[in-house]
Image (cartoon, rainbow, N blue to C red; front, side, top):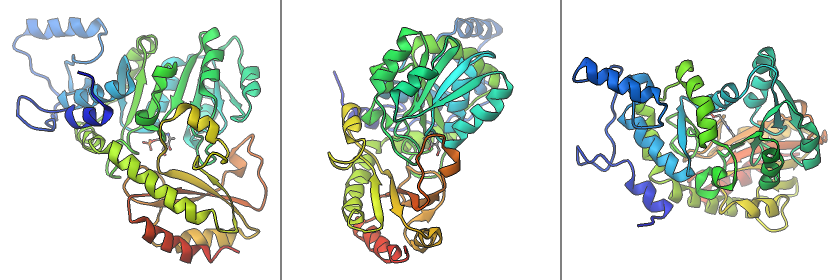
Amino acid sequence: MKKSTSTILKHMGQDLINKSANPAVVRASTVFFKSMQALIKQNEIVKKKKPFHYYDYGRYGSNTTIELQNIIKELEQAYHVFLTPTGFGAVALCFLGLGRPGDEFVVSDNVYQPTKDICNTYLKELGIKTKFYNPDDLNDLKQKISKKTKLIFVENPGSNTFEFQDLKKIISLAKRKKIFTVLDNTWGTPLYLQPLKIGFDVSISSATKYFSGHSDAMGGTMSVNQRVYKKVYLVNKLMGYRLAPDEAYLIIRGLRTLDIRLKAHHNNVIKVVKFLKKHKKIREILYPHKPTSKNYKMWKKYYSGSTGLLGILIKSNSKTSVVKFVNSLKLFGIGYSWGGFESLVVHQDIAKKRYFWKYQPNEHIVRMHIGLEDPADLINDLKQALKHIK
Ligand SMILES: Cc1ncc(COP(=O)(O)O)c(C=O)c1O
């Protein structure tokens, strides 16, 4: 029987042995075997590199992490899902698993800053060169591809500036040259876009964000096809990556309500945006909220929904007053991360970090995560704080 995503999220991960709606948290280092023969037999199975279901030591998983892998595998329609201790761990695993000295990576200029940092520092020292491309210019991407290009890494929408790219065009450029394609899909989640289904080789999510949804757990998922699995399997094993079963449990618990939370985030965003767009100091809302907004067309082409993170582009000659606006918000926590139930805000200084962003000195980006509070309260809070912008 075909089931919808909402039903899958509620029904997967049950513990039939303990007759419970949720999986047991299996905390284990040693995995017991009946005999040496049984242990050796299991070792042989593990060596055959079959994904899932087999582990002979706690570092390779437990029943709890396997339940999480199975849920993500279903959502992403993946061959395999590598679990990592953080979302950034999944980014690093992807780079280290697929790249070798002498390779080149082509990476979008608007990726999460640590993704850029690892390219410009550690990977460079390992002999892997990164070329950053302009997310608004497919020709620029095309020109950056060379015979040495091993992978193209896209984050959609881009961190802080929220550009949406033409994903299928990127995939077709890469496929012709057998280049691996990777999408950081943390914003959209597999509920609104399934990257592997449209042709990406890898889909990355920070499970810290919407999957867990309660700002109390960290984790990452790297969902892959068979070709990538074969290349990354050993690297993952040798790096000693492991997601703790307690974190896996919390992420499964968060996933139960992912569908409902995402809809609620979106409904609140729409109300907040309706208020914000009337403000004279706000030049642009970086969110696909109406057909005339920048990037709406490209969002609509690939996504079946939108979530709770957005940027506002403020026009002001006084940075101090914009920072005062942020500091004056009472219901928005100031801090990194997003995807939890609560509203958050940060002033983002991106000017020096971007190669292609056309920065104007009187432009400021404030990133907001619209949480699940009553949107009327959020609007009242914004109303009092916006008064500080000069
Ligand atoms: C788009 C994106 N990808 C990856 C990460 C890294 O995730 P984590 O914080 O779980 O390491 C973040 C974190 O903010 C992010 O925003």
